[in-house]
Length: 228
Image (cartoon, rainbow, N blue to C red; front, side, top):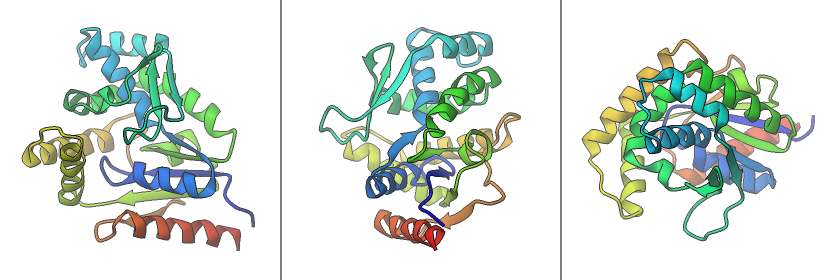
């Protein structure tokens, strides 16, 4: 067998998908594509335009017209990529708490998912890509060579998100983060369109007792095993 050409990493919010995806892509010299930034970009754009997250028609229409691009990083500020919305750099704007609170609602809308999934799939089918999200192995790239589902407890995920925000100089409440993650899990796993779940042929990694380096080593072993 050969090295996996398309690798998907799915899992709940703050499970470490982005860190693993970036590290694995760097190791393979592949494109790192965190598809969640597209849903965050639409959420940010809706908030910026004063559109209610509950206005499904307006948010869906916005997702069909906004020009979202993901490019290699141009600033040395910890970012893994640049995220542009109609040419504006919103890389860190999409990580704000108000976006966290609305992105799962936006991502559940069929119109939004249809508009963004097609673009994600086109990019993924080019190959040599590590794609990260919640429905990549099940919906966007079901034919991927290697599918990983990364798990972690709510407590551990809240701790990670809290430290991430504090390290950027932001303010955060551990209780608020935990409640937000639980609500996002509920929305993501119960939505009618592309709910969060592991693909039948995905390999599940529990990262609760593992730091980023150990998770990466576990993923490397899966890649190497695929080559045997």
